[in-house]
Length: 177
Image (spheres, rainbow, N blue to C red):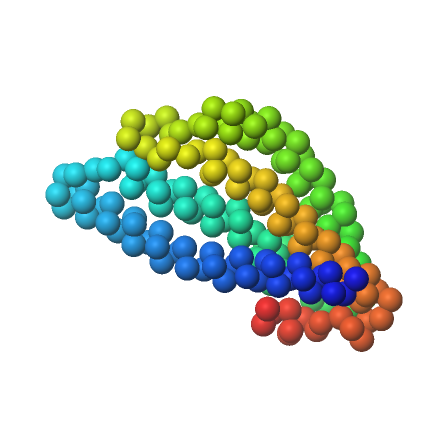
């Protein structure tokens, strides 16, 4: 099972490393849009949409990477004070009680809209906008799938830590990511 968790972690690390390069691209496109619009009075709807859509894809597809490196906001008033076994229980129960039901709800509610979008090959409602909104909407499924996989990895590692607390990473190791 540990090999499966390692494989999932490597997958999300790889995706995260690729997505890191999207942030400077987004900033550059945003700057170009601002210079063109306010400096030259020229606007391209597709260019304006591109940085917004890239940002949406970055955040949805990068969420599992952030979970992998414990970058999500959590109310950890007591978490850091707990033993490795206690933190593992919190992670295990949090994944089962909060993460998976949320992902299920999002996937079930989002699926019909994504199907319609693909059936119509939906484009931007903006004249001159980007022609592939269906791909952006599909990022919701990527979000659900990648987070579900990372949740599985977290549960595997949590069960290992509950069984053998010496295998659990320390809080300092988690902070380093």
